[in-house]
Length: 156
Image (cartoon, rainbow, N blue to C red):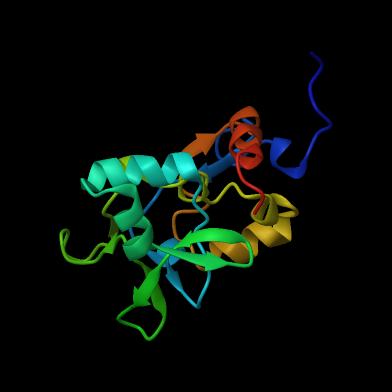
């Protein structure tokens, strides 16, 4: 199969000369907090999280899911800076860090950050997102083919 039409992130990285984008989670919690939003969750992800938490699916939905215009979403709770945090954001376990309390079972929306369509639309969109995410443009280089796979997993 021929290569897809080149996109802006197919250009060589200025440090390595290889194409792609850099990302390394800094555990700052910025992607899990802020103004009201949503973390969309499907049935399979709900079952996985319910099992991980050891609660019946109905209880999981009652405690952790809210309905939004976009579909079922994880609930949010007040954060320390006046914004809202994902219900599973843990600011206590690791001093000075904000970690996901359900990391291995987190929804696709979380697993694919920052490689969402909205962030990859243009270099300017990527730079805007990087202003609130210190892990963007640092760390390991993610290859264009991997970026495309991650981007295809969610419609954000």
